[in-house]
Amino acid sequence: MVRRENVEQVWDAQFVTFGKPMPRHEMWRAAYRHDRYLKALTQLELNRRFRDLVRNFLILTPDAKIGVPPISPEGIEWWVLMTHALEEFRLTYGPYPAGFTGEVHREEKFPDLAGVLAKKAASALAARGLKSREVFLKYGNPKYMTMLLEEGRLRVQPASEYSKPDHNGAVRDDELTLEVSLYLTQDTIRKVVINPQDVPDDLEGKRIDVRFSRPNDFWLYCVSSSVESRLFVDFNAEACVIIRDRDEFRRLLLAAGATAFPAARGRDGAAVYIDPVRPRSARIDIPMSKHFKYSYQLEHRFIWELPLSSSPITYEDLKLGSLKDIAELVVL
Image (cartoon, rainbow, N blue to C red):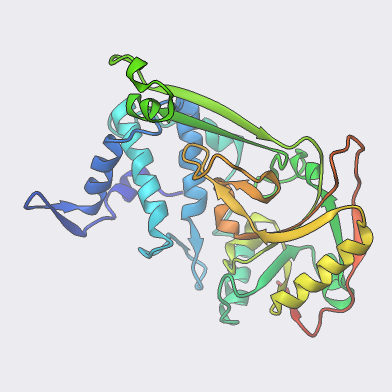
């Protein structure tokens, strides 16, 4: 687990502000104090956010050691969000460890990234020189991954299936709803109302909770575009199929889905990860959207949607044919 005091000591880079050098994390803290978007979260919600950030923060290095993302255009976002959360803890509860509780860690255990499975996974993927977003990976039981490679056999589940409690934390999610909580300051409220002059000068910030939901179920099949070996651990998987020709796999799966679900509209795409306190749009496509705590999975989704209907749907087993020409099997 990444400790708060360790994160605070990471930044040595200096920025010049008003003629004086400023550590990078202090610049981010100062920016956060001008927009305390986490201010309305309860203590439990803030702890859960910190846990969600840590889950995205951790990586498994090729030599099977636990690491953190590099300071890169992609990785730096997590450093910024983590710094913001730490600053809200400090402003609301005081110096570390004030505000932190063990509650959220009992709710959901962190994956064992130091175990035997993690070491096997790191070794298996490091030797292949793969790059994220250039391949698809499906993680699972060796038996079913062998069937996927040799015969193209796979199961498409109703989206509602993934909310069942027997799934682990990396899989379990309510795919039919997404909740966001916005903190609107006085200035923000004035920008969105028709009569901004009527907004009182002493108005406190307001928290607004919004629940996006979908009225009916849909079929869903997911693969990952991430070659992070930690996903073996997250999914408790001892095998994976690496799909190198993504376009051909998409063609095969969408064609099979069109036959299996003739009345449904099929589509696919990269999952859109939604930060529940800072959504980038008020328009959220529920089937393509995921809570940002799953961002590290780089999920690619295949979806088949029926017209509005109250009829329940069930799983469907598809057969694409052998994938040996476009994929390979890895068994740990």
